[in-house]
Structure formats: structure tokens, C-alpha cells
Image (tube, rainbow, N blue to C red; front, side, top):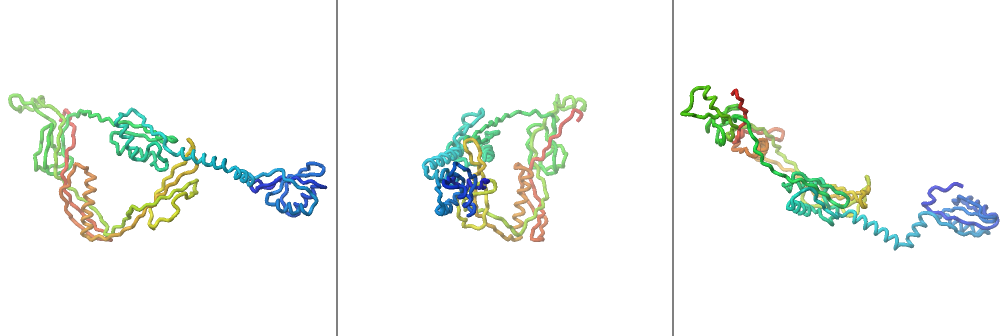
Length: 408
């Protein structure tokens, strides 16, 4: 008879039957619905066969009605293996604890290496910064940020670093950094004039090289000459001859700043209703073991007290020695958030619009420009929004380099 599918999982027993025509006993078992297979004759008055573990009780009941002697020779299947392991529970517990210990030690940082030809003071600064991030020998890998996040933080917090690479290799973190070396090279500028880049009224001038061609309170437009790079040598008084003046001309790179009052028209729209969400700071963390799309909770089983939740997930692969297992430690941070809706008055919307316009214009012009005043030219309200047209006055450097050619 063919082997019964799934018999090893359920367990089965090799039974030896002795008596007159023992094969008839196995036939009786089949007739009564018992699962029997692999029947073999062992002798003139003995046969053996496999019987499912679940049918042993019924087998004993049939044996009482027949004149046969039955003995059990072999026991196979998971139930017997499990029973055997239970009897040797000390060994099983030792194996499980050893595997858990290896998993634990494989997910701890044992070494932090800083590579690259860096000064000792900079290495100490990097080490202190890493310790502040929690990256040090003995740290639990699951609690650390990703190498990319650590790399970004280091470049932001240590300005002396030109570049830093962070790599996690097994139970060690390897960092390779390049020091930022500032070399102040004086760039030789060619002969040039400084002209106006936009229209405005001159407020202040600072000329370090060249000849100013405008004065304070002058109105200039784009392209007007502000500081000339053409200088003339005077010998016994200034020459009036054009050719002689050209011979005495010296061309330099004009340098300086011309601060002018300029004007901008800005349009901005501000809603009268403001909707926004805000995190309150209340948090709860839950931990899961993740395998493909299946997650098993291991810590933090209760539901948070807050209803509106912002979720952040962080997945870290579990390692066994240097190999990454297809199992992840998933850390979920549940943060309480609240939604707010506020109504602005028209006056408040106007003030918000002015502040918004100043910020946008400042970003456009850069930190050196100074916004001195603003005036609302027109305001209108429609569809729950306030639209503003603003006239803004700015003081800024309006110089622009223009090369001087020999023919000028």
C-alpha cells in the first residue's frame, strides 16, 4: 500500500504482528477504517506494517478480539521527536538560549572606526558627536538612526567636515571623513566697470578701487555707469589731448558697493480660515517582528489613549553573525496630533500677508538686502481670501560688473 500523505507530521508506528495468517489482521484493520501501509512479511507467522499514531487505540481494541501478538518496533514522526526533545529539555533550552544570545550579540555595535587622514581634534569631535547620537560600542542597533541620517547630521553639526561617509558593516560602524580646507585664493579680476543692475536712488557708496561716476541721491537706471575702472595719470596737470589721455590711461578692476533704494511690487493672497495640525508631544512606541507583509507584535499591545495619530515606521533587519535575516525589527512611533481651525479677521489677514511678502522677497534678494518699508496699494476680499498688492522699498547693492575692452 502507498504511503499515507502527512503521516510523518501526524506520527506513525511500525507494528509487528505474530500469529496464524497475520496478514488477515491487517486486512481487518483496513476494513475497520484504520490507515495501514507498507505491509511486509517478516516470517512464516509474522508481518509488519505502518499504522497512524491516531489509530493505535483502535488497533489495540481489534487485537483483543483476535488471537495475535502485537509489538511496536519503530516510532516515527514529529510527535515522537517533540516528546524526545521534551525529555531532554535541558539541551533544548540551552540551544534556544544560545541562539538568542548569538542574535542579541549580532545586533549590538562592537566597534566604531573613523578612517581617513583627519586631525586628532576633529576625530575627538566626531566621536563626541556620534556618542550624542547614541552610536558607540555596546549600543543596540535597533535604536540607531540609519547610516544616511547619521551622515547628514554629522555634516550639519560639524562644519569642519567637507564630506563624511557612514557605513554599517555587521556589528561595526565605519566612518570615512574628509576635512574641509579653506584656501583663500585671490582671484585676479580683469579690467571692469561697475554698472547699475536695476533702477534706484543712490543712498550710500563704498569705493575701494576705481572712480565713482555717480553721487548720493542720484537716480540711476539699469546700465548706468556707477564706478569706472579707467584711471588716468596726470603729468604736470591733466592733459586735454585725447590721444595723450588714452596713453596715460590705466585699466583696473573696479571694486565697491553702491547701495540704492529700489522698489518692488508684490502680490500675495491670504485665506481668512486657517487649518493646520500640530503634534502635542505625547508618544507611544510599539515593536513588531516583521516578515515580508506579516508583522507580529512583541511589545506595546495596548491602544493609545489619543485618537488622532501620526505614525512613523522604522525597520531594522535582524542579523545573525554577518548575515541579514529576512526578519525585521519594526519600531512604530505613535504621536498624538490635533487639528485646529482658526478664523482671521481682515486686519489680521493683512498683517499675515505683509509678513509673508517680506519673507518671500527677503529670500529672493538674499540676506544682505534690507527691506525698509512697505505700503498696501490695494486690497480685496473674495472667496474667503484677502488679496494684497504691496509696494515695498529695499536698500541693496545694485552693482554689476561690466568688462572693459581696449577699444572702450
